[in-house]
Length: 140
Image (cartoon, rainbow, N blue to C red; front, side, top):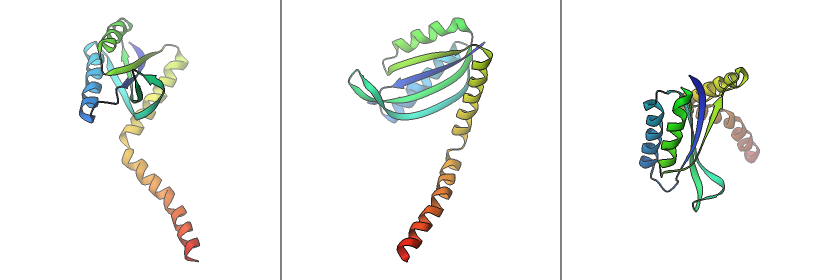
């Protein structure tokens, strides 16, 4: 089992439910070929560097997983067939240094996924003193 990362760009014209269904189908392709998904990272809707099929934006989604190398060709074939995907890229992590980097990326993605509410609280706490300073200055 080797470690891989897939970045997929889903069409922006789909509804939220259709995007979620496409992502579920992508994950199903990986798991049906014997892969174990280690982490997921939703990057959200972003502007593309250049238009792809007349689309200026795309929904970015990253999947980190482990799978046998022989299954990658089937996964990429199924990605090419999927009409909801604008682009995809598969990255293989092979050397010890790359595997260590992959593990760090997985930890970061899992941490990001598990604590979006905590990040919001942290931002509010960080913003609060600045707001108080501005309020004091305007009051004086």
